[in-house]
Image (tube, rainbow, N blue to C red; front, top):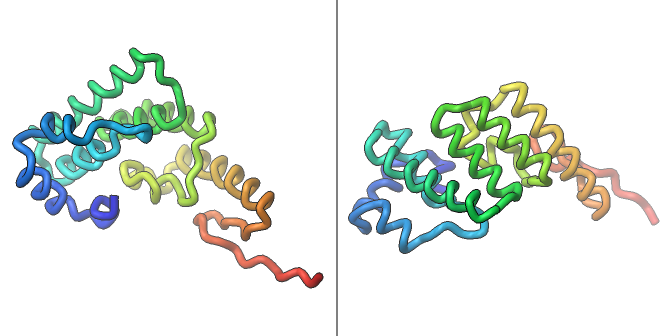
Amino acid sequence: DLSVRAERYAEITDFIEERWPSLGVFAREFPPSEWGFTDMMFIALAYEALGDQRRFEEAMHLLEEWEAGAVEQGVENNLLHLNQAEIRALRGNDNEAFDYLRKAVDGGWTDSEGIAESTVTFRRFQGDPRLVELESIMLERVNAGRTLLSMPLFDANFQPVDMPIEEP
């Protein structure tokens, strides 16, 4: 995740290619978790950024295969929707990506960062009114929880706002 956030894509792909003969072998050694197929998502993003279409397609095939299996098993939750949104975004299907992202947010997905910060796949959507709307919903939900815990609220950039100190 840190290498992706820092856009160190060549380091990611070099690491993978030096250790595994194919992405299929990597996927068998590091299968999806309850959070989704995050590793493969990062790998696909790296190959896309580097313009390696063949390896990007290999990673996307594995992602789409995983998604189809999850759907076939009846998985229905906000983390699956988030992964589905990322897959659509990587494919360039922006409207479908936002449909699934809305399902994830409406299903309760939140993060202590903005969507484009916590999910690198959506960085290119910064400033898109649809993303701004979904981040606003998420921020409201996060701040409601922070209020219950007497924690400083987050501003629109998901940074803590100083709270006045109350005297006993």
